[in-house]
Length: 386
Image 1 (spheres, rainbow, N blue to C red):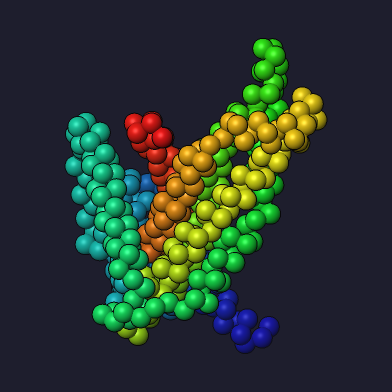
Image 2: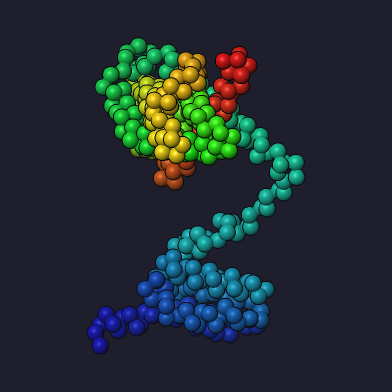
């Protein structure tokens, strides 16, 4: 047998169970580290189930070494005996062992944590409502700050009026508008085709299939075109803005800009707001053309309405006010999407979980506010008979 193996056997952890007056004395010996304690686990389980009479003394004077695994087992032995109603005293401890044992206690002083006061029914009902209102107010203040900073100007440096490089705005337009064209065209083409098919199917019973052109034209140009485009941009570009600004916040790049004397709103947010304000109206125009093209194809294939008849009827049904009423909404929806995305991005904490939560909140809030704004515009148009 080698010398190292003999030392390991000699220093193996042991528990000697000895009588001590009317009680018991558990003498712990050897090396109680994680690599060795497996040898006493079975004996320790038996002792934790055993109920002693009188006082139990846990003698640690013969321990050669202890780590957190050994301290956890000692603590487990002590608490199991106390659970049986037996008084337990530890002897032969050292400051190192005391520190390890204290780490596993519920409180450093051995006292149990104070129970939380029970909330009343009214507090449980109205407290979340008040917190939500307070959170909405905080989001509104942050949004107004970003909007005010954007209206005031780019302000790359604090206290100095200096413009933003056009290259950054063009780059953002490329990401938000140009690369979104295929999905916007496909979505709008399908939406127009579906509306035309369903409208023609219902109007066929009245012999008025030609009015499907009026249905698609007014609905698409006035409501559906800008609304669905804004929802798509909120999910695509809004989430990207939140993720980009949030990741910069996680890596403390936003704080670095402030240290350098640069305004994060002017550097990060202003170019994205300008790009969104330019991109959304342009994408809405493309979406309207694609939707009308899909409706024309379905009307020709499903109802036999020729393209010339479709265009002629569309010219009669749609006025300039119909087109303008839809396009007016686009810049406002773009600003709302950009501001909500920027606010959520600046609220990101230091974890990936926080980033995911705020990206989700950004998309949900943007879509909700866009739909709410569309409803307010509809009420406003109805009030002024536009």
